[in-house]
Length: 637
Image (cartoon, rainbow, N blue to C red):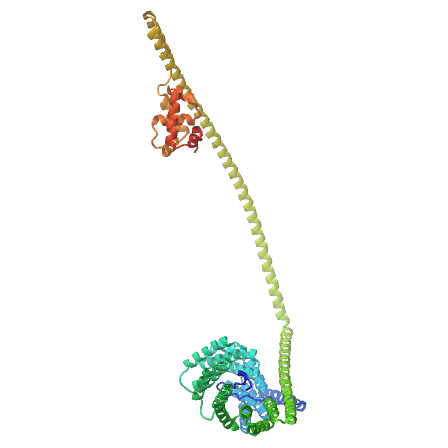
């Protein structure tokens, strides 16, 4: 059993107009190409003549009944010609072009859109997908140039965008199709348009082997489809959505889900319609992949019966598939008959791609039956036909690229010519106005720059003055700070001298007391006759000392004035210090030795050492820390 991919799946490409059918690629010969080019030039000349005649007969702003009646007569003539089914392709296309020109001149937008849709459908049925795609591109480009479209114009442009994307996908231009579908999704499109756009995006991503992303878009398509009201529009979208979703499941080998989707599509399609035909064909492919040959044969027979009158291309493909099925079942006689029917139909209808595959399949059948000569002939013919089809497709792509390039060049030249015409059409007065405007602008800019320069200079002078004033103020403040510091230093030295004098006074008092005590000791040991004289002498010494009995109070007052908060800091460190111990700490902080402190306080050096030891314990000082240095920390502000 040969492996079949999801590319063999057929999907109905339709919008709201008419279902698109997969069309074969017809051979392009040099003679036909020359004839087509000549016909194109003739149609272009006829269109130009009609445009000129219509512009002369019906100028805007003037009522011309004769011109309008002539235009209506022409429209009626071309409409009747198009109703003739036997009308040749060239004449039909010329009539459609003429109608487009007439409806453009008369401003009938709805009728113009109808003729554009009819042109696209006619090219699909009687031309090639590339021709229909080119027509769609031309119509879409013309509508994109509308500067201020109304709501109706936006809807028509959206439908053309959707149809262009569908035709691009049918022709194999998936990148262009993706661009158009995304443009539709960005517009304020109706739900049925979004449903188709999401579904085709899922189909493109499935063809590009991105199943997860494809599943997301199919899910969005299902959500949009379920939001549609129950009417004919929803039924039209049903087959498209579920056929595309079946293609995704088919590519992932989830055949049960694919069958369920196709059954849903069959339930939505009418009997004998093209939608039902595509569903039968897709179902046959799934059952062939599952090797359920009985069901595959049943659906292939249904497809052949339905496609015999409606779709010759799918008829030929189904004959080929059924022949391959019989080949796998070793029913070579039936397979050979079906192969020959498919070859005959493909040759008659110029289905070259189907013909190439059918010739190669029939060659394989002949090889299995032992007909080596027939195998060689048919296989060679099939390979040659396949190469010609590939070359023709490539040539079509090259022609399309050349057409796009020529269109781009012509459009660029047209824009350049328009720009040159606009530049050369400027009068001297306009040029003078431009020159005067530029001169005024230059004058305004010059005045503004001069004013700005003056403002900057003034600001620079002000900044210089402010900086000089700031320097002067800073120097004055530094001078005042220096004077204050000197004054404070002088006051501190004065207080220190006074404090030293008070301490010296205490030393003198202490010496006097010691001499008095010594004199009293001598008085006690001396004769009674000399005691009165010694007493008089002691009185004279005491009277001769004009000291202040409040020495310790004055010392405390001066010390507190010089070293403020000393006692507060000391008590914060050791609250349980007695007044005597506080006085001892003040004397130690004044750099007095133990001997000097003992003389001032009338105590022995041993007693002073004991007092210092007790204060050290209360201050919790280790033995290696000097007492005087520690207490001098409390003198600092």
